[in-house]
Length: 221
Image (cartoon, rainbow, N blue to C red):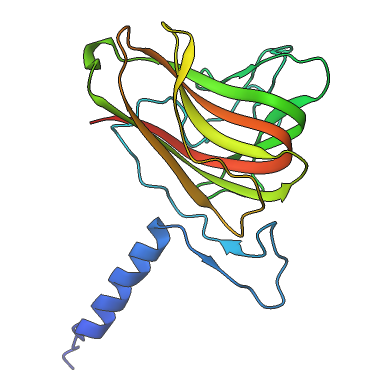
């Protein structure tokens, strides 16, 4: 007998294409009877799109660190030194309170890891990364990140800002999150690249809060 091979129908092909798209894009949905995360939602752990124009190193906090669990840590005193890969450093010391930043596998926006921010009576504590943009002076710098704040206490403030190392000052700040968020919220800010072109992206927190940050980006347009 001659065997016959069934050709895939258009509905089958469309379904396969839709499934492949779902695997590459984060989604959130309620899970009845499941164990909720801090956002009361489940999160797709699929691949995150790779942004080849992002000037930051280890922007999704996915690179393993030297820590036994592979998750880097930093604090606002700078002691011990940061173990978060990608030249992420904590600042600055204060008399009381402070912030710890810990790479976490518990609540990623996409991929496997995100950055947990734990601030207690903090005063403008920042996790920063320095990058060079001398050849791009005058062009528009666009900085962005996603934040999720499950616990916002007294004086809670979370934002991203751009610091000009030559002028030694903040030159742009995103909108500030001051309350709990139900899910991931995008933050962004744009500013011309200043003369000197040595810049920091900073994740800036004050007050008392627990938050997560993922997928920070710096692009020049």
